[in-house]
Each structure stands twice: as C-alpha cells, then as structure tokens.
Image 1 (cartoon, rainbow, N blue to C red):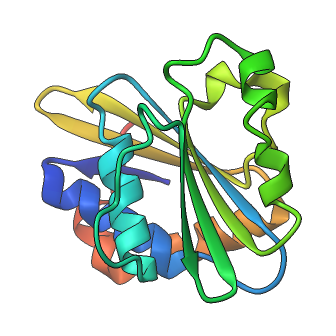
Image 2 (tube, rainbow, N blue to C red):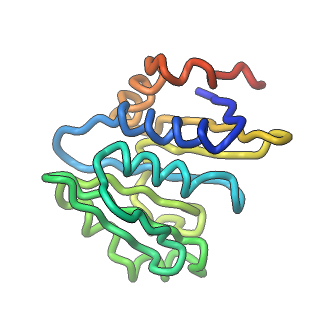
Length: 165
C-alpha cells in the first residue's frame, strides 16, 4: 500500500490510521519506520501513540533512545536508533525484553539495528516526492498482514491512497 502525504496533517492521519488498524490481542507487534531525516517518522509515531490513548507529552526518543508509554495492558515503546553505531549498541538497549509481554514496539532508523532488532510485522517507509511525502506500507508477518489489511480498509485514508509506481 502506498499513500501520498502532501502535508503534516496527512502524515498525522497516517499515524492515526495505523493506530486504528493495529491488531491488539495478545503478544507483541513491531513497526519499523524507515526514511530520511525529516521524512515524518516521528510525526507519524506521535500520531499513532496519541491515537492509541497516550496523554501528555510524547517526547522524541532522539536523545533518550527509548520512550515507553503504558496504556492498560499494552506497553508502547518508541525507539530512535539514529545516534547508535550499530547492532552492538542496540543489544544494550534490551529491546527484546519488552516483547515478553503485550507490547507495541515502534523503531525509527531500524537499519542501524540489523539482526539485533526484532523482526518487523509492518515496515513503513517514508520518502520525499517533490513537496510531499510517500508512505509505503509493507506487511512482513501474518500479524502484519492483518494490520496492513485493516489499514487498507480504512476509508479515512482514501484521499491519500496513491497509484505511484
């Protein structure tokens, strides 16, 4: 699925759509957020977290590396790996420990983590297209297929659905 995101409002709609489409129910889920600096990864993640029910400040984990939010049984963990050197640094964060419960793990700059990261259920890639952004959603597991399928059926995103090739 690809969406054309002409502005911040559209990127926030994408994040809210991901939240609505999220397949809760036992276990953990992992979303990898790919894209250049300024492509909208953090904006999308913040909107997703807000839509899931996070109140108050949603801090960018650029400097803290990891921010977590408890939403009842669900723990949302937002990670930014931009400043890390590679997989050895990621191992020290203990991200796999979060996945023992009911967790949604959002990882910005997952390419820095290599094999030290849990496998993505959904990979979201944000890229520039002239003055807009393009979001490409790819399911990478059966849970991810359900999540992406729910997203495709979200009629509020229809204005952004694209036939970009």
